[in-house]
Image (cartoon, rainbow over all chains, first blue to last red; front, side):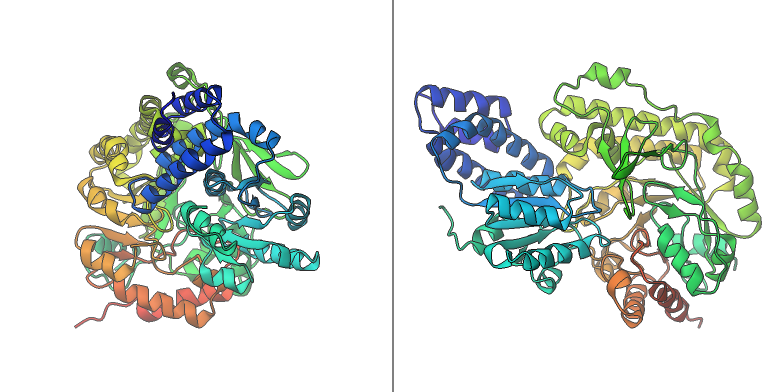
Length: 215
Length: 386
């Protein structure tokens, strides 16, 4: 029997090769994929987030953990889809038009995936209309908008207004992030939340959906 | 007291007649072309063909009439590099793109993108080996054409009584490593493949040394400040742990800074790192950094009076004059003046302060705010004489 505590350790320590091996071994032993995710992999990423908040982990350590999680998840995704396992929620995420920065946004996407969300990543330089279209198409519960530049922050406002015009604003929670963004700015454009880093983003995503810790 | 004396007095932690003022002498204390053109018009200067000194950030070299009007104390030398040399723009439909001498592809979105950002890095991907790093076609940073004419330019500036500073031809060791490898891949290497990460860092160090060893023997006698840079801070914390900084970056910075000091013993060393670098300041000081920039006062831990209190005796601050993330672009002229006054009061006492904005003035800074900033520097930047 595979000791699945090792899977948790492999992800926390950022060992993608080992994480993948352990997931495969567990699948061979008929461990249900949803158990692997909910009992071992999500708790591993929760621990990674806790270490980041305690400043034991910084971006490099968090990245390799997220990559280890994704290596395991790649094996599981088709199986989860087959078994119609529902994600915690669906998040559409992207960087606004005119802005090509994506390291922070990618980290947020990976941490959300690590927390059990389904993430639809639209990439960078995304026009407001494409955000709206993706929210509608994927019936997203959350829209995450990123901007690293003061000069592209006004685009976030444009996205929120486009959601209102499309009649979707009440159906989706809007979260914003990026270096120059603040709580005050988020409130000013009528967003539902702001996270100052990737772990805060996960916490706020859960909060705005009314999810309690540990689900 | 001329500009050069003013600057050197301040950097040496003594009070000059007034706080020295920098605009545009580096690619981190500059101004975006749109803000620059708006400013010229606002203060009644005739339109001028912009001289771009950094294509990626779309920064201009301020013209003589403007630097005179604003009494800028420093002049910058801009060696030829991937930001200002051999830029061949291609129209790729929804953007402009160019691939630089490093093999990095930069893209500026149409119709109104304000900057270029990296979209492809030559060494990205899981398959990269040490041999790939060694055998890659690296640019020749020791090519003397990179500094053609700079000695004469520096002598002219000095004859005008201005202080002169020079920057290198590649971004910081960590930043450049991220550019050639891809930011995510390189940061992951640092945690998971240290041997590969170190090979890339060593290559960046080597390319920096090659440039300075070519440039400084020719220029050391005519420059006052040597500028180096990297980026270790984020808005709230640090990109990499202080421990990782000390293991992987600090030893390489020591080699770099020691060599620069050997080659230009009278020049002051200016070091730029954005974000919250407070935990690293003792390391910078130990490495012999004379000047910190951009003094990112809005980042966590970087509150200016605390910085001055704890480190002001040992490092000079060049920057931190006005916040560029909120106050300068979005504030009122009065809020700009208040911010300038507060920052001068925090950072200027006893010298050790050169006024510049926190990083470059971006396209969204209204000209009236830039003028308010400058007026406030004059209003509050004088040192009272007994």
